[in-house]
Image (cartoon, rainbow, N blue to C red; front, side, top):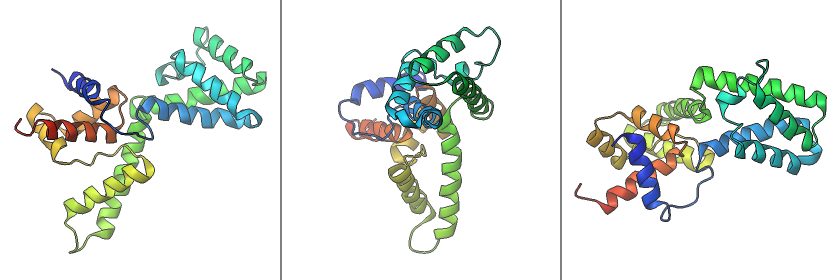
Length: 211
């Protein structure tokens, strides 16, 4: 069973047992970025902008690979995006500017982060973690303890997709012969929050201690 299948199965198994997360699905975090960008064109009607984003997300048009090609001539999706924005109060000038902006943002995320905004956030979250571990290092906590504590803080305060790398995560990776990067890649493909994946593996370990 591949990693994605295992994670999906664990999510379905423990979905009713897990708590609330600021961003359970990374697609919602991406949609929030799109909302914040589009809202600059329509600040007098924030609710309408949010409805437009919800509609585009429901139609599957917020996927970065689709947004990245909006400016290509004869792209049928741009007709739908334009229609949705127009119906939610965007002017023709703002629609043109918005389409250009969305394509630009999506191209960057596609090019540098394989279309996953969480990979951008994880990259910078790891930089912050490593800088603080180095700055706070001393005799009071081991490097491993500091790394865990700061990762925990980044999850709790900023909802950054940085793994705690706790024992359950390590054992899961060892059992499957994969790296932490492989695990993060699989969770990104499912668009599952990293904190959620950490908790799923810890919950599964506690329910299957001898495995």
